Image (cartoon, one colour):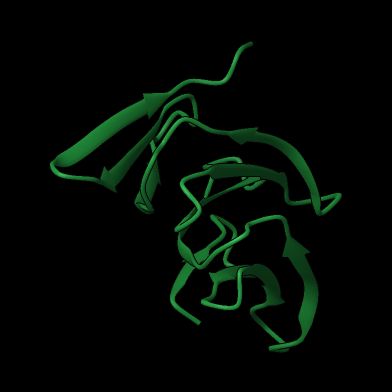
Length: 115
């Protein structure tokens, strides 16, 4: 386990791991609810939207994955980073994702989902 995020309601924990997976855990029981696989390299950062409905994960494969927390399915993949995505965070209104990727220089990015 490399990174964790807790849902706004405090019921769910999401983790990202070196084994290329995102895992969804029940915070109260500690039970593993689901394992999400789509990254082709380590997962370095996870975040949950303020409404508790979406997971964002950033990976060493240079992608950002957007997951539906309820259905545990992949909604979209954001490509275009030639290096690992080390950190993702979500704005308080859930409309903007900020990220950090490192190549020769520190690169910041912003992604906003289409309405």
